[in-house]
Image (tube, rainbow, N blue to C red):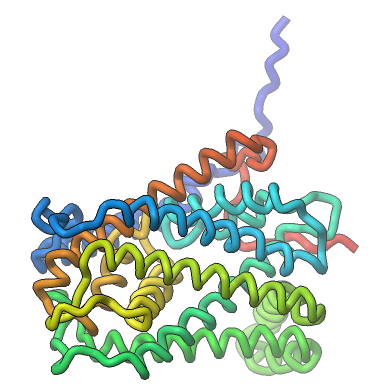
Length: 377
């Protein structure tokens, strides 16, 4: 007797992940091709020649990799402070789920991987829903963006640049002056986002009325939907109602970004990134490089952040170092920085899946997209 169960029409009609996001995947492939073509046209290679690696102190490569362990540890476990108002999650699960998700963010286009972390951490039938978890991730991203853009703005203001500033970034059709302006602009963007989410959290009723008054002119259902989404995401700021958790989150966020900049500084020193007078890269310049890279890859981009990652570092270096350094040792630095990060994140994800297979739920049939569930009451 045939016991096979025929799939229901509903299951047959439900498209898979790749079909749902085909347009994003195609667009990301086009963006990647354009970025790689632009880098190639400018004379920059994804894999520089061996001469660029001649002055590398190779012990700094594993040294930088060790700093990534600290970076990814604090990047993962600080999430417990944001989730504290909803659920208590063991550190081991936070780490394994986060490390898998960080690899997903890296490998998937347009930062679609951001939805993997709340998808894996949610607990059906509890207050830890997809919406609640996504709200904490949004809050984390806004705080990270504000934190990072503030570091970049301070570095842009106080750290001396080369004089005169080059017109463009290493042959790319990107104005160095525009790069500096972009840094200050992103500070404004993340500050505004933080204020908006804060208003929805601390003055929800008033913010709801304003949203309906503005967007209700076009469509009242649209206004209601936007207000509901904003309120759900603003719930991620529950951490600010708990003083101990708020301080813990900001302290570990500081550890996270401090280890990040120290690692980038170490690797840059090891690659012999120097000024025209031979002096080495300073801590302030490393902060600027980290800030420029961070605000670049926080934006949706192609898989692997390929091209976007490299452009962010080159934009930062163009403000502080002469062209021969950027196209020589600088090219080696960019390659090693990217290669080590990609290798580490993929290895960390595989390690997490091995030591804690239960932390990874099947994603093939899951909807990776904006949350639509409601918190349990």
